Image 1 (cartoon, chains in turn cyan, brown):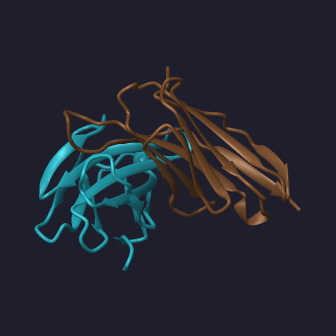
Image 2 (cartoon, one colour):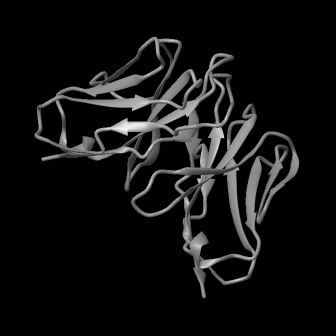
Length: 113
Length: 114
């Protein structure tokens, strides 16, 4: 089975711009979660989508949003980028039942200048 | 109190030794526990999951869970230089009776010296 894919792998944006990141889960997986990883804060949960609905949300400002499509692919959007948004954004795929294992994609490295 | 706590290390062990990594968590309702390995510049890779009290073995890895003490550990036997990485403990916090939210510890840096 193919693993989780994320595009793009690297991105450089300017403060104030917006960005959209994409994630394709493992075939058959219906849950997609997004995480932000920074050296200072570690890995932090952004949100989880299941069957096109946001099921859970972390403590991030409204500038961070996401969606999921009927084929389980997911996108996350960050508007009005700030320097502090520079991070590795990771997508994780899971079959869907609560508590199951999550498998991470390679991540998107976002740099905001 | 942080939800998931790990000793940041680095933990240095000689090649062939047993590496012991520890993690404590605060949410007594947690039911799912995971260990991820992350090499520098890479994404986390799932290496062990454990759901019940006791030990679970997979090759050179053994995960141990004690829900009463809110403690989970990972033992790596016959440590190899290729095991040098950051090990992340993750606890699934059940929200509103469904869904997933993984809360991660800060990670323990393991260095295996040959």
